Length: 241
Ligand SMILES: Cc1cc2nc3c(=O)[nH]c(=O)nc-3n(C[C@H](O)[C@H](O)[C@H](O)COP(=O)(O)O)c2cc1C
Image (cartoon, helix red, strand yellow):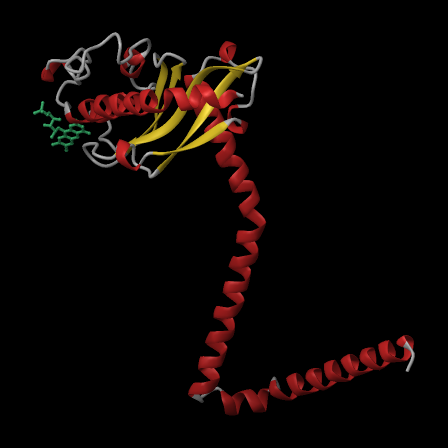
């Protein structure tokens, strides 16, 4: 049998099946038939299941259609955050394209793995930046991003998400106060362990009036971030080649 006649047979079969399906659907949808079916529990369950299936399919399609766009927006958001803590003059690479995954389960940074983005100028590493979490803010976790230069000196810190109380703990946001800028230039070398604390605890960083817990926890998390960088400094700086 030729390929053409097989194809014609298959098309004929498909058309007949569609015709039968249409006829059956027309009989099924006849008002007198629906009148009989409506009181039956199986019919109502079937209709409900049909609508649920339709909703699931529509949701699936919407998810597929928006997934790529959402991913792109998240990447743009991350890039904008990283660029706030690494000055533009320190890199000519795309930070998102130069990163190293470092195990951080023991570093108490809020994740088992931390992605460290490397800033490079003419192929030379100039700085590193990464996201981490202070898990124990007053009202919940506080997400931070920090940039450090090659020697571990802070270039910038920003709070990127938190649920601290407006008017009290939210002064950690750079849009509310300049407090977070007080970390610029600080490192494990130019402050002692004791100085890495809010003033109320004997350190050098201001607390806020009526809100000591939030800044205390942010200072402690930033110190842990610096410890993490120092621990992996050699490995990170060697990863340029
Ligand atoms: C409704 C409410 C919200 C508060 N929100 C915060 C907050 O977001 N951050 C914070 O550090 N303290 C917040 N505080 C104050 C803390 O409970 C605590 O008194 C304050 O941090 C001072 O801590 P200290 O006694 O160690 O100085 C809040 C208190 C209340 C009653």
